[in-house]
Length: 128
Image 1 (cartoon, rainbow, N blue to C red):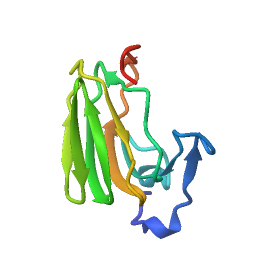
Image 2: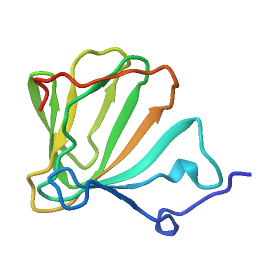
Image 3: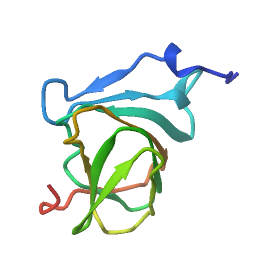
């Protein structure tokens, strides 16, 4: 049975440690068993990014900023994200996205996404 959980009780997973792509994730949705929808509390340290840019064929993603500031690269555009910012990446929107944190503090955000088995992720070579 799924029960309430506090984020401080969930261990963070670290990916790409020691690189410019380091990111920390607390997969809150999977406490007590894997969930159909992904919900993660993410932290992008200062100087890190989420390259390469990508987009999903079938999955929709949502991002909400908890604290910090970073730049979202979406297609050929750049947007500043800060506390309270929200963005939806619709399924099939062929505009690669990635985040770059050049601020002096961690960028903390919530990411929500479907977990569809037939989803294909596209990484265009021009999407750094």
